[in-house]
Length: 384
Ligand code: DGI
Ligand code: FE
Ligand code: FE
Image (cartoon, rainbow, N blue to C red; front, top):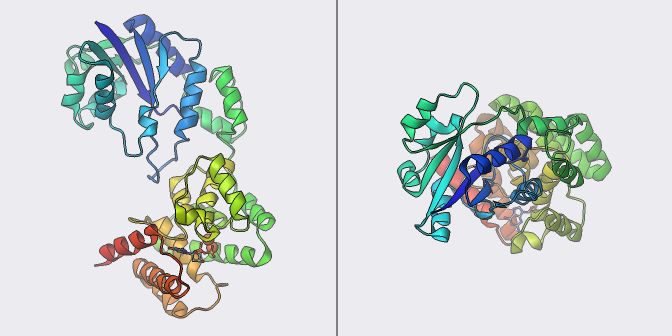
C-alpha cells in the first residue's frame, strides 16, 4: 500500500527544527511521499499577521530542495476560506484514492486539542495519526487517544519560528536557526523587518506627507489616542495606526498599483480607479511589509479606515472616527454633533459619521464601496 505523510504548520518561517522533523518522518515512517503543508492566512484576526503564504511555501521549497520524496503543497494557502485539516485530507484522499494510506503528523501538544478540531472522527477515517514525541512525552497518552497511531521520536531542537522573527526584528543573527538558503531568502525579501517605533513613524509622516496632510495625521493621532483612553484600547498601538493610516495618500495611483503588484494584492475595480479607496490598502501593505508591523489590530485599522467593514473591532472604529473628527478637520455639517457623540457612544458616533459620508458620496456622485455598505449595516445591527 502506498503511504503519504502530511505535515502541516504555519512555517513562518520554516526552521532547522522543522527540517529535522521532516528527515525523521522520512527515516522512521518511510512514506513514499511527504507533503509539507503551510496553512492558509486567515486575514484580520486578532493577534499576529502571518506572512504571505507564497513566501512561506517558497522557504519550505528551498529548505527541502535536496530532500527526495518531499513536496510542498499549496492547497491550504490557495484557499481563501479557513482550511480545516479535514478539508485538506479530503483533498489528498481524492488525489490518491482509497489504496493510499494518508498519515497526518501532529505535535504531542495537539493530542488533546485534536478532539475539538473540526470533524475529528472524519479525520480519523481519512488518515492515520503520527505523533511527534517531545521531551516528557508519554506514549500512553498518544496510544489512548489514537490506538493505531505512529509515534515519531523527536530530537530536541530548541528553535522556534517566533524566536527567528524576534531576532530579525531586533537585527540579531538567525544563522544556524534556519537553513542558510532560507536565511538568504528572508534577507532578500526582507520578510521580518524591524518594527517601526512611534518616533520613527512621526519622522516618516513628515518625510512622506505634505504639510496639510501631516497636520491632519497628527490630529488623527491626538484624537485616536484620546478615544483609546476613553474606550480602553492600547494607546501606543492606536498612535501607530493613526500615524500610518494615510502614509501612502500622496503617491500616485500608478505607484499605488505597483505596490499592490509587488505585494500580490488584487484590488477590486473601484479601488483600482481611485486613490481615495486604494491608499488605505497600500498603507496597510507598507506597514506590514516595509515597517514590520504584524499586529492585526493596527493593520486592520489602517486597512479599513476609509470604508469601514462588517464587524469592526475597537481599533477600526476609533481610527475611522478620529479620521473624521480630528481637531484640524475642515468643518462639515454635523461635525460638532458627531464630536460630542464620540465621547458618549462610540458606535453611534461611527454610524453617524458613516451616514454623513454616505450623503457626501451621493452628492458627489461617487460609487459606494461594498465595504461601506457592510459597515453601516453591521453597525446598525450592533446598535439595536
Ligand atoms: O484619507 P482622508 O482624506 O483622511 O480620509 P479617508 O481615508 O476617509 O478618505 C476619504 C475619501 O474616500 C473621500 O474622498 C471619500 C472616499 N470614500 C470613502 N468611502 C467611499 C469613498 N469613495 C467611494 N467611491 N466609495 C466609498 O464607499
Ligand atoms: Fe485616508
Ligand atoms: Fe486620514
